[in-house]
Length: 160
Ligand code: MG
Image (cartoon, rainbow, N blue to C red; front, side, top):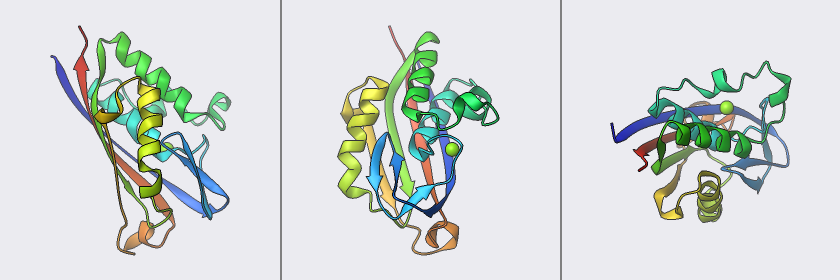
């Protein structure tokens, strides 16, 4: 198989705080993510999409939250491990499409910087990475600003 598609989803609770890390980028705002790791919901969804494409399990299996090594873990470092594992299997990310669901913070001012950081982590060109965002129109838990969710779709290409 030359092409494999994967999807990832992650959601975390929010609480009052000084900011959050999304897609490897620090965004100052009135919230923080409640998480065992650094709570980078974007990179968690990206990793699960990559692992899913290659049927390699999920980040919960690879980096268990019961393991103290992953307390406050840098999700960019974990994503590099996943990238290397995929590369070892013979695949690189062809393109990645993300949707961030949150009421706040506003993502658009950070969109291109986030794409650049993800491109560096995955070692691919930035034009292969799409970051989109939507609110939930004040509906449900995300609409009440209790949480933040991310959907990721990735196409993995067999490298030569
Ligand atoms: Mg997570």
